[in-house]
Length: 409
Image 1: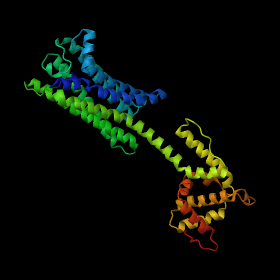
Image 2 (image 1 turned 90 degrees about the horizontal axis):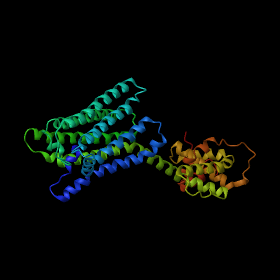
Image 3 (image 1 turned 90 degrees about the vertical axis):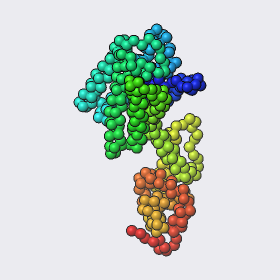
Image 4 (image 1 turned 60 degrees about the vertical axis):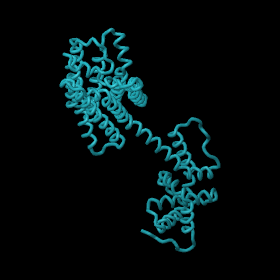
């Protein structure tokens, strides 16, 4: 039925494969829900996040209840042959409506904030609520005594009322997918989208395009039965593969923006922590000791502690820096072809090294240096220290007797 028509194969081993086939997309969707769940719980007041959670739960339920083993169990528990048909069709219709509502809310704002979204929400809820009610009425009127766990769509394609039910759910699904696809691809072309969101939308667009191919395969197979032909293989073999690929693509589309941004932020923090290592090692030398080990410290905490340590040690050193040496080092760095930004960082590295070497012996009676820029640019200074040969050459040029430094304005 619906998706489940595809579970029958020509051999028992293939049939067993198709029987378990539906649990693959169910597992992928459940994993997507598990990834999103902590954020949904933490930001429970966000209606869009709750809607994403509900949508993924609905999608997972569709593939759980469409599995032939689940279909047989539901039919047996209720004692009604093929009762799973309107149940699965209703879940699929609700999922389609949820996708449509979510994309509208994402793009145009929440219903309580946007009159157009409010009108669209009422339209979707009323139309698809009516479709679900009609599915149960048509099933009650249909005569479908023979249980079909795998090929209900084509087996009952010519049965009065069941024929209309099958056509209704496929048309409702196709309509929702067409509208949602159009909204998604229009949104993708919008300027200024976050890169991770754009990729997530692309995967959603691919997922809905595969859904359209699924509908085409189903409608072609059912239409062939109406004309007395047999194209059941489209429903039995092509449609399930398309449904599985679609579910995976949609799951990736929903989790990619969140997971991508999260991983990108983790990577940014780790890179920042690693880039501060040269300056941290220098400050540890100046201070005489480093940071104490903290077990189970998160990446953010490690970065914050390293930045704080560097600034705490650098502040008294920065007040003893020789501003004339910094200016000469800056001109020397420019003379070596460095950009002004990098030349400033190398010059800062030179005066910090000079202050560390001088230690407490520096004469502090003169004018104190402005430490604001130096403390703010610790990342650039640390990157400069990763090239000690360059820093040494600039320092040697700056300390050379006589006016040997090329001035670049």
